[in-house]
Length: 337
Image (cartoon, rainbow, N blue to C red; front, side, top):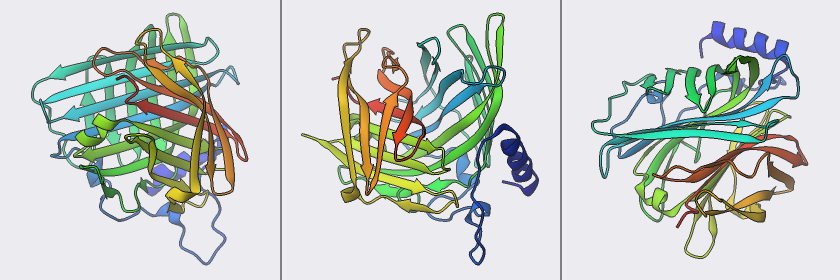
């Protein structure tokens, strides 16, 4: 991120009460001003790649400026598939937490997938548009009777998942993967005559590679943004008989990121929820332990399923309580046999 953009982002975050990086205690380089290096090179890798599967993925939590306490969750996701058939797909969802209503839409388009040059992206469908790169993004879309228009600015450097941004899966396939885990977000949500100026935090994931083997298995993904300025990603894959921890990262307020050891993690679901739309059954509500850190992740609404005909899955906003507080997004894929 350029220095002027970082300063403007910090000033706006201070004014609206969104925390950024922690203070450097002196003596050590300020990691919040550095772009990590590894198997992912940024901002070049914000663009597209000649790989079987690729996705750009945003989730976030938005509060109405004029109505403090009125919250919304959102998701915008764009997928490019080169195999088995060229196809691109968008998903968009909005959770009206006060209204306890979930809206979603999505559409696949078959045919040649447009090239996305290195350094950024300009991804356009009729209902969804996503442009940006280098930690400054713009999202626009419609879902149900809602229109979403958002500007996102990273207030922490990107996180290279799996340590250096790359991993081979032991069941086949591989992935490049990084996140922008704390993006200040401002914009508007409009429904009919109602228009809400909103502010909040978003999480951006960008992943590409031979992802077909893992899409055939399914996964549980957790993205936690804690009020103490930490972020946690956990990724579990469905095994033959049990859920297997595949990877995770915890980033502290000073932007230090560390991989989470598999033996330090336990995830226990509270209950099952069965969708009336698809008959799929999903775990719902989780106790998460990472070493001596104990958290509970509770969905704001059980029915946050994207009940599409091409690939139903659950993706929803949640609250974090326990040893720390915050908000989260959870994705559950592979529960519709």
